Image (cartoon, rainbow, N blue to C red):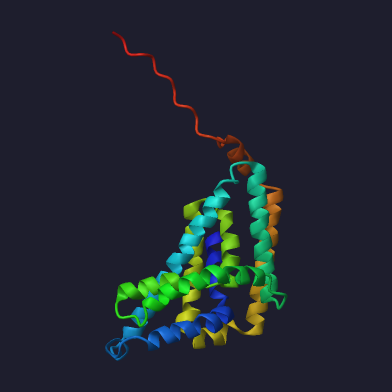
Length: 243
């Protein structure tokens, strides 16, 4: 279920992705050498490499979020708080798809400062001439301030582990690829008001269900949390070796 939600968060970000990243993808493709652009499948191959780099950066962000979440997920209260936070992010993102207010603007403004420090590194790699440079540009592109990424990052803390967070963010990134690579076609289907409203309602329902489970976890989850050690057990003492 978390993986499906992560992919759908990316897939239904088509409006945001096509408007924000579609232009970047087009400009990067136009900057490719004529030998690549004129070769069948050349721009598609480089487009996939650009996007792979972007998605890998999302996975790195997921590792960071999962690491922070893991510090507080060993107790029942800590796990519940993380689940409630993830549920709130999910519900607010659903409200955005229903036409409500966008909640992530302050985060985007705060992220502009580190982004301005990264931009010169990307500029030094342009125009792209090799697949390695395309991957590096894509990884820098992945840190572009983006509210939908922050929504997915807030949801990824539900994993509670670094690699779980990386997996959810990687799946989110995969969901954004159609809108970035094929923005015109994706825009037609995924930006219809009826489709977006239905998806927004589904996200809000999923957020509510997550909150309910956080406040009233199943009995087996109580047992797992209580059984989990809060710190690694001390090494067993060994008798001194005989003479």
